[in-house]
Length: 388
Image (cartoon, rainbow, N blue to C red; front, side, top):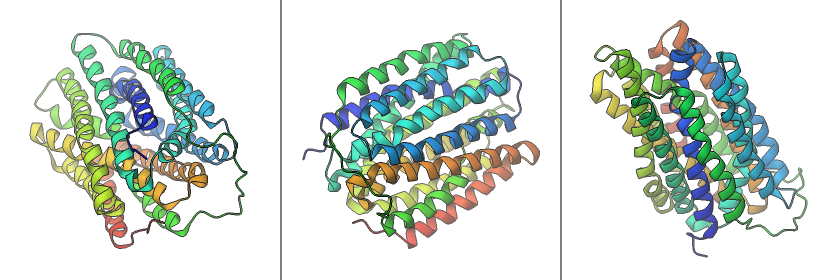
C-alpha cells in the first residue's frame, strides 16, 4: 500500500485548513482575553483548561462509539463544523466568561472528530509507514498553524482589531468542513462487527498512557508561552510592539513545527517511535527553562525553536506509536483513550499553570512544567512500550 494516498493527502489538507482556522484565533486569544477584555492570566488557564476538559470527555465517547458504527465519517464532519461554529461565537463576546462557552464548544467539536480522524489515517497505511503518514499529516496540520497566525499578525500589524481576526478565521474553517466531507474516504469496510468491551486494549498501550498522562500535566498550553513572549520583550519594547512580537513568536514556533514534523515521523519509523517521543518530551522541558531565565530577542527565538520542535512531534509520534500498539478494529477506542487522557491532563496543567502564574509567578509555573516533562521523557526512554 502506498503511504501517500488519497486519504493521507485529503485528511492532511482538510486539517491544514482546520488549523488555519483555529490557530488564527489562538494566536491572539490569550492577548484578547488579557489586553482586550482585561482579564488576569488565571482566566487564560481556566478557559484553556475547561476547553480541554470538555474535549476529553467527548474524545473518550467518540473513540469508543466510532468503533461500533459504520457512519463514523459523518460524525467526524459534524465535529469539524461544531469547532468552526464555536470559534465563530467569539466575534460577539463582551466578557471573558463568555469565552469559556465558545472555546469549550469549539473543543468539544474537535474532540468529536479527532479520534475518528486519527483512526481513519492509521487505517489508510501499513504499520511500517505509520510514522511517515502521521508525520506528513502533522506537517500539513502545522502548515495551517503557520498560515493562521501569519494572517493574524498581518491583520493586527495593519491596524485591525481582534474581532476582525475572528471573522476572517471563519473562511478556512468552512473550507475544512467541505474538504473532509468531499475528499476523504473511510478505509474501514462499511459493515462493522460490534466491539466487545470485554476485549482489553494491549498492555503496551497502557504502558504508553502513563508517561503520556504525566507529560500532559506538565505540558501546559502554548498560550502561556505567548504571554511569556510578550513579558520577556516588554522591557525593551512598547506594549503594542511586545504584543506583536508575541504573535510573531506564535508564528515562528509553528514554522519550526511545519519543518520538523515529517523528518521526525520518518526518523520514528527508522529508529523507533518511543525514543523520538522521549526526546520531544525533553525538548519541552528545555523550552520551559529558556522561558524562566531568557530575556530579549535571542531568548524569544530559542523559545520559539524549542516549543515549535516538540509540539507537532509529540502529537504525531503519540498517534503513530498508538497505531503500532493496537489492532485496527480497536483504534477508535484507543485514540479516544489517548486523546481523553491528553485532554484531562491539559485541563489540570492549564488550571495549575494559571494559578501558579497569577499568584506565585511565571517562573514557578514554567519550573513545574520543566520538572514533570524532563522526568517523563527519561522514564519513557527507559521503559519503552513494544509495538505488536
